[in-house]
Length: 328
Image 1 (cartoon, rainbow, N blue to C red):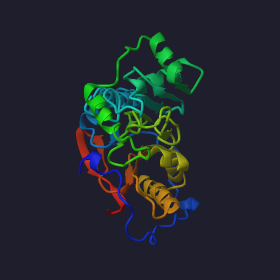
Image 2 (cartoon, helix red, strand yellow):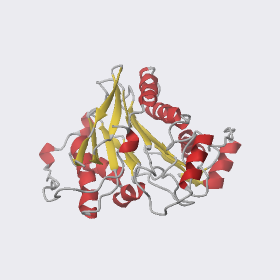
Image 3 (cartoon, rainbow, N blue to C red):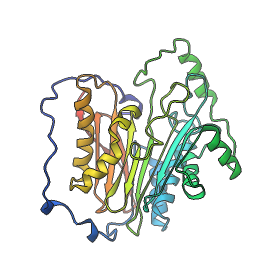
C-alpha cells in the first residue's frame, strides 16, 4: 500500500481488548550501563518507504560519519525530492499558498535544535542543527529562522513547485476547513541512526499538513513529540496527525517506557494504544512511531494499516511492514 493511501480510516470493531501496560520489576529491566558498544554495526531507520534517503544514511554511517550527520543526510534527500509533497521542496502549501517547513534534530549528548514555519529554505534539518550548535537557543521560528539561515549562506529557494501550486488551486475551489485525511497528507521523514560508536541521534523534517492554517505547527519541530533521543536508552520518531502526537508527547513517552524496561516494540504499541484509548470511537486519523534502543533493537507501531519503515543494517536496506491496531 502506498504511503498516501493509509491516512484516515474510521474505527471499526471493539477496543475492549486493548493491552494494559505491563508492570516491570527491577529484575527484568535491562542494565543500559553495560551497553557501551554497537556490536551489530551501524543502523539507520526512517519512517515510510524512503529508500534512497535511508540508504544515504546507512552508507554514511558505514563510512564512519556520526549518527546526527547521517540522519540529516537522509532528511536532505527527501527535502530535495519535489515529488514528495510533504517534505521540503515541492511540499504542499498552507491555505494561503505558502510552503512552510518544520524540522528538529537531537544528538547523542542530549542537545537539540528546531526550526518552525520556515519559508524559502530547503534544508531545514541542517538549519535545525545550526540552531543547536551556533546559537544559545533550541528553537527559531519563521522570519527569525530565515534571517539566521541567510546569515549562514543558505540558498534562498521558492519551495512552491508548479505541481504543488496546481494542486493547491484545485483544492482552493472548495477549501474545506476540516482536515480531510488522505487529501491533507503529512508523511514526515523521521530518522534515527546508531553509528559505529553506538551513539544514537535523530532528525525530523516536514512541510506539515497540506493546506494547513497559516502558522500551524505540528509535532515534527517539537522535541519530545516528533523526536526524542536519550543516548543511554534509545530514540523514537513519529509521523501522522501531529496534533495527536503532541497531546501524548509520543516520542518522549516511548523512550521513557524503554527506560522502564519495555522493548522498542512494546513501547511503540503502548504509545499508540494511549491515543486510541483517549479517542475512543473517533480514531479517523493515523499516527505511527518507530524506535531504536541501545541494543540495536527496533520497534514500530501504527493506528491503521499501511505504514512501513526502512531499516539499513549490514549493507541491507529493507522496507518493513508495521503492526497496526485497527484493521480497516
